Image (cartoon, rainbow, N blue to C red; front, side, top):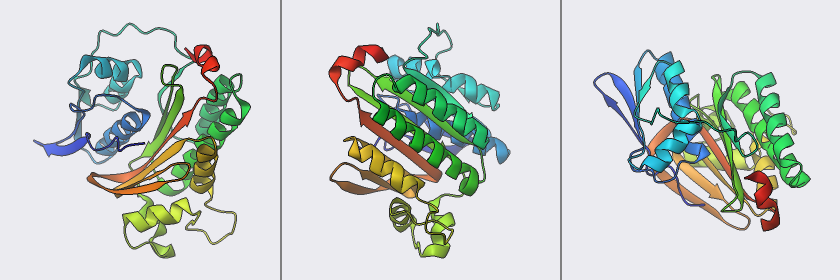
Length: 266
């Protein structure tokens, strides 16, 4: 999994926070949850928010179809995404960007995704259940803000993607008392299962979800602050992210188990 955050830029312009996706060629769940987390943080800080959508129409249409534009509008922001979108029922293949303000909402979203994927592969469904529940609830416990989730199946590519993100305290703020000295070491600690709590069974959500995803030959992207780590089945790559993100972003990409199942998700 390459870095998908490099083409996303944030700036302040005339008293408003602007997220620039004009250079993004493919809209992924991580982009959607990052944009909405930024929009909510801007509202909480009393700033106006604006999204410059992708320059290419297709990814802009897709972002609009995933309700990024309407979600921004509900938060009081503005955007350049298309508004002439005819929505079709894609409930079997998409989970439009949604907020996770409470634990009950996290569980409801996990149940929804689990139900969509169980007919294809129960192990994949269970991995997604673990991912959304564990990491989503972590948002509630540590980030101290509203998070966002989005998921998509890509039948032509034979893979499923989901992301959870928030613009809260970030991993470094949470794990500094446990020895984190910068964003990269904080991410490494989180991936190893370290939590701000001392209990042995606490704080394993990111570690266990990453294990589940990579056992399915998938990959995980975890970003916070100026650091980004991508974990694959046998690899781990760290990058410095010029577009620093104040909260935490988690995206998983999981190959569908067999091409013959792809049509069932279209």
